[in-house]
Amino acid sequence: MIDLYTWSTPNGRKVSIMLEECGLAYKVHPINIGKGEQFTPEFLAINPNNRIPAIVDPEGPDGKPLPLFESGAILIYLGEKTGRFIPKDPRTRIICLQWLMFQMGGVGPMFGQAHHFIRNAKEQVPYGIKRYTDETRRLYGVMDKRLGEAPFLAGEEYTIADIATYPWVARFEWHKVNLNDFPAVKRWFDTIGQRPAVPKGMAVPTPP
Image 1 (cartoon, rainbow, N blue to C red):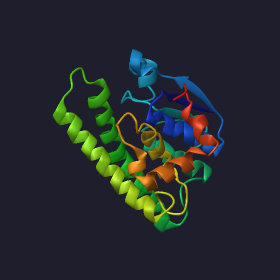
Image 2: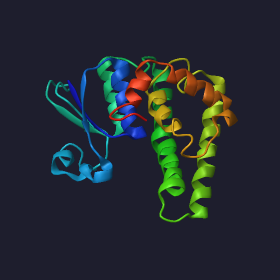
Image 3: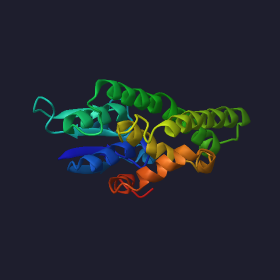
Image 4: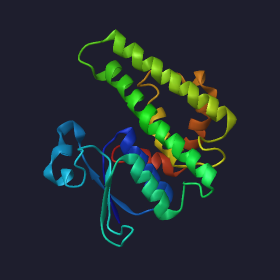
């Protein structure tokens, strides 16, 4: 049984969705980042970068326990472990990883900054709000163009790229985006939301 250390964030939910999709048994260890539980020695022994999510697989590739952090790395690992949601075709595989990196380097950081300046900053900073909401909308435009060409980010297959991106788009109200402005993204979002594993993963460790 895989140990999942997580909290109710998009990055955490990527991994719980993946675990549900793969049908892997896992035990949830909530790490309340609002209370600073990510700084405990026990958690830092698993992830020295003090961020969720992290996992410990008692049966790593060499048969020994494997602690792993960084949500993208965890998705790749679980995909390779199960042979699911990472395309086997070399061309499609690298396209999948390309869109995963797009999420890791663009969607996550930029949407997260928009959330900070809109919702969490102690004072409203118009420059920060405009900078990150503009960039968020630009990224939606990139996704909308891609999803107007293909049903999923990597093409015809639902992959870890979609699993990584969905929980961030699920917070569209947080970054003040109307999904109707991006019809291809909305179609993709609604389609993924109907997969049985997705709402289950989104409810870990607490409902969205």
